[in-house]
Amino acid sequence: MSTDAPDPGPADPRSRASREVEPGVERDFARNLSYGEYLDLPTLLSAQHPRSVPAQHDELLFIIQHQTTELWLRLVLHELSSACELMAADEHRPALKRIARVKHIQAAMTEQWSVLATLTPSEYARFRAFLATGSGFQSWQYRAVEFMLGNKNAAMLDVFAHDEGQHRGLVELLHRRSLYDEVLAWLDRRGHELPGSVLGRDVTETYQADPGVVRAWSLVYADPDRYWAEYEMAEELVDLEDNFQVWRFRHLRTVERIIGSKPGTGGSSGVPFLRRALDLTFFTELYDVRSAIQDVTPAGYHGGDGDV
Image 1 (cartoon, one colour):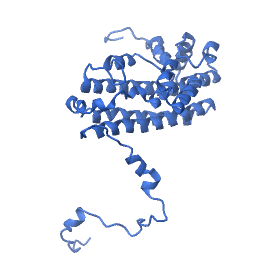
Image 2 (cartoon, rainbow, N blue to C red; image 1 turned 135 degrees about the vertical axis):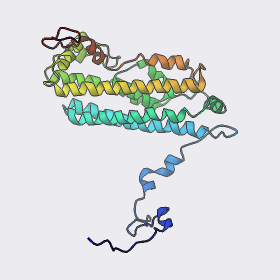
Image 3 (cartoon, rainbow, N blue to C red; image 1 turned 60 degrees about the vertical axis):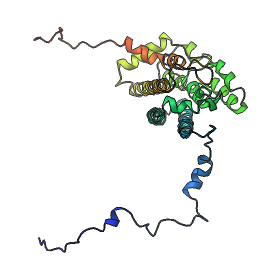
């Protein structure tokens, strides 16, 4: 093979720092839909209204952090609502896809606490007073997610009485089956007999663990090959809860890092209040069942590391 190809010479250094706009790239947006119009960016990017006087540089971080969280929560609600409908229709495979997406959203939400953690106590103290009584505790979307996962508390509705739309939405979710309720009903329809008291329970109440449900999940975990769909669903729900707890923990640690033991702006005790949330669970029986699973002893095993 000839090696006499001409030497192209040194690359133009400008080509490494810029690129030409290709002829086919759309430029006429007098008639065509633009990226900014599709996303309604003028509305989105004009929704940040710092209130500190004099203006504090770090307040924009605080606002965008929480607005971003609310956008993610909106998507979580969208996915969970669809997952509930799919489970009610015995469409567990696409429901698993929705749950998997929620897990990735949770990862993004958890990671972004590291951004807020760059806010030092001194920086936050300069504008915290301008939050007045505003608090993340008043996030109706967060409360809606908890309701959809089964942690229902009618007393929380009073916090949202000032907004008719938010209050009405939470009341509707209070009376609707949670994701776990739908999963248990699906489990029963697949031949795993569950107690009637569980299937017909008052869904406005926080779910309480039942030994009959633990027994049903025990059979699933005892034979995952036979009950793979149920087994996979159970593990996806455990992932969902674990991720939620990691998010809660990162929230607690970020708040503690920034305000220490100060009370919350919304009137809570602050860090102690957040710490108590770590004891809350959504899918209690999926953790209880782990204690019921019997260890397998291989045939011929006599313990220790010596010869059999």
